[in-house]
Length: 546
Image (cartoon, rainbow, N blue to C red; front, side):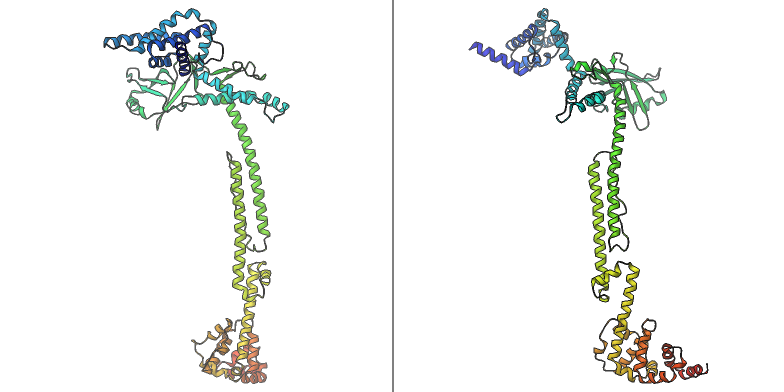
């Protein structure tokens, strides 16, 4: 039972603490096994809770870091004792450091290398290298549907740019919020009036340094007052490594009116570089190559230019297709028989450069189609509306369409002709139905008795097709007045001569006078107008003398 309890306790430690040493896939060294046993002893000696807290703090620290940490624990233990308190955590740290010293003779170069690698993986450089290995291995593999020749060409022509671009992306993803907000700590020290500068303390990503900025004494107070409102900016390429941790080489602080630059004053900064061979990836075209982050800006510019050219060509292609559709729709509209106004689509939305070109193309194409259908529908509605207004003058819709498709001027002219013809027919029908009145009328007398209030009423009824003859006129004079006003209103109509022919032929007095003296007048209109005049006899006498 005791052995089972011990085994269970050991497994709990291994699973709970998740130490890198215990989780190693490679075979454990004697030193790692001994450290593992120290973890078990710590738990038995100081209890699970204390051992857990201590191990979470120390398990990933190097030997030198544990020793330094133990020195601080000793100071903490002394301070706690002075207040009569016993802190088991401090005791556990001190105990573990002393036990670790005892087994240093077991450390080999393998342990040193593993410890170094574990430490490196916790840095920005280690995190980037791990991610770049995963990302580039995927790019470096032959695709399922990629033939061997294409794969070889891709590796040969694209490996370097792809590797640089992938590395640059991973670095950017691991920058400590590279725009500077929330992660950059800045502290302004008192102004050095004698030498005219401020000292500024910066801290980011666990790295601290100082910079100086010269500010004239006349502006110093204003600079200090604006300090809290200054926004920090760090360009994504202005970074370096400080012991494998990312640190900016230049920080810019700005307010509404000014910008201030603070170059890093640290001496131990190094360029961001990565050796491809360290990734253990098979690619003959990158063997021996070392990535330099300073090259990434040029590569990014090159890729952006290539993308711009590609984007431009693709955009032009989409817009050419839209132009073809635009011209085709307008051609169909112009060929439409009802498009007498020559209506076309005026414009369309061209595709801008950038993302979503295919979606923008579909939207613009659908908008073109919508405009085409709208104009078609409007032409159909306009035709049907025009026909509804004028169908009384046309026997069939096809008859109307024949003139409609020739344009408004032709249509309106035809409608005017048919309207006048209809008016003429209606007047003649009216006159024929009232021929007995016309036959016996004394036009000279009727002219004298007519009034302005009655003129035009007869013509309205006649030209609108109203069956005037069917009305009940108790006063025959009313009918005669309407006949006279209809003749008068027809004077400027093309059918006036036909009206006069009927009236002169039907009316006994007019017919007799025309047959007797008509030769002395230029035409029937001149004769009729003269006949109605009070001085008709004088006019006739004058005409006879000519």
